[in-house]
Length: 236
Image: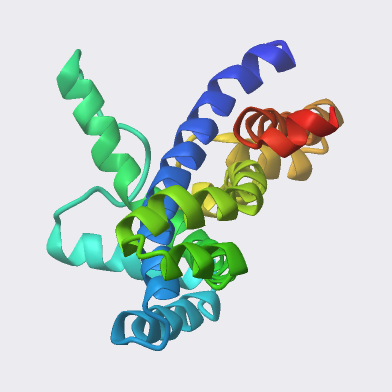
């Protein structure tokens, strides 16, 4: 089988897992980070800090095994693979089956990535919220909601957009271990098996693929910055 055909299916599966985890991680990091900057030292901010420290100090392997044990104990979600064994489901039933199998690995990956994203979001928003122009706008009687949406968020957008592209590449490449643990048929098991089998063609293809992914992610960030920030367009 050609290497390209072998990589295509596995790449789709890895990309599905990585993008789903990225969406979950950003969905957690954005509101919690913004609220932490809006109400620093509050109980939500302190809780975010404690949980982030706990998750950052927890190995990815341990989190994956913990979720698998919980799923096996309660029988709510499948503990491995991408589809049910001997399943002949089609249409939306097949999609629902994939989503059930995707839930645990995507959640574990998101919990690994979310604490760092949350801290970046909080730092960027806190810097924007304490900037002189926001304080001046607040002094003119502008409400907090408008300050947040129309002044602080646009000011904090640049570092977060740059982080968005890198987080996508990082989550996709960081999914290797979770894929191996949970039997997700992505590039991770293929890469590990190729190393043990000394299949240099597959190993080089996977490394090249992730190098290209990193370049594309950085390019996406630059394009978004160009579209969002007038200062970047003026410099060009």
